[in-house]
Image 1: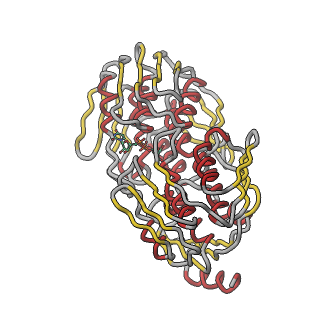
Image 2: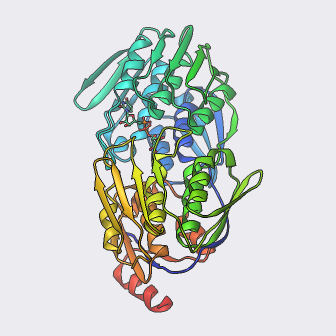
Image 3: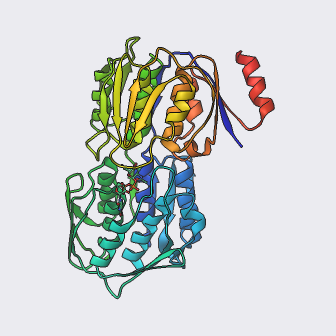
Length: 430
Ligand code: UD1
């Protein structure tokens, strides 16, 4: 099993280029199978989640060709199978976008039902409610969800909760339906807009993405296109918070600063200096981090995917802070690991009460999920001494060459797969 060995204590300084948004990519890759023509997708993050979804797409018979590391061509003309097995869904929940994409294109789909995951139970009732509203019969049997329709007809769908997944799945399922669909209480995340822009580039007619009402006029067919994915808000945010935690000075490049506003605002409250350009944001850390409070909310609120990274920064701030999680019920699993590093954090219900400490010390840590794993890496980089982080396959789901990018910024980090190499690295950088 691979792990990161990290020697903490260095300020991270320099520039880092941010890749394409993983969560946009997952919707876009699924959407790409909805035409029989070839689609070229650029700025694709080459991470575990996108690779697994591409395998699932190949598994149903589509052709997938990497043009280079961050560019892929997909042709959905040869799809022969509407069934996506549990093998893929257990590795990556977002394979369920194929449910909407296949239903939209072929009027039938069958995808293994995702269970809960490490951050919560994550029901998909809103996806299924939407498919039914479009006229599909939806059944759950033997761990699979199947959808089937003679034809799909536009509908007025009101989501009971703001959900990224269901908003994307319903845009996919409805863009080839007859007539108009209105999605109300839709999610507004930048990647919703990106998936809508991509579908429009393929010939769909979607308006209002980025607001809470999305209007979709059904079209009869979609065509090929070339499209470049937006920058990853969460990857950028992770490096911005690494600058704050290590009291460093990092410029994230190739980003859309507007998408990072809720993060920049919190870093300023914590005492960091923020400088913004057209496509970059610089975070200048401080030796005097200040406490503050944060609550996760749907976009444009503070993203739940940045909650653990924020907690690491506040764990090193002067005074008491509160972090409230309002999206997922089980997103504080990393707190025990931070306390083992010397932090002082108590969780009650959906709030973490953080009493800042002067320093953290390195420890052997287990990454509980993707973003919490990244947060533990930041904590280890800010801590005194060595840390080993296990279960880093979670981190590899969403960060491309994380250790490489961190090393360029001055981090002392190595990915190893055996104890001997871990010891060798420790002796080397000792
Ligand atoms: C997506 C992101 C994830 C991010 C999350 C919230 C992807 C691949 N993943 O996850 O990184 O943390 O948005 O920004 O884009 N819910 C229901 N019923 C449903 C669907 C959702 O009750 O049918 C609930 C969920 O349990 C959760 C909330 O709605 O409490 C938001 O979930 P949702 O926005 O759908 O998250 P995901 O799309 O799964």
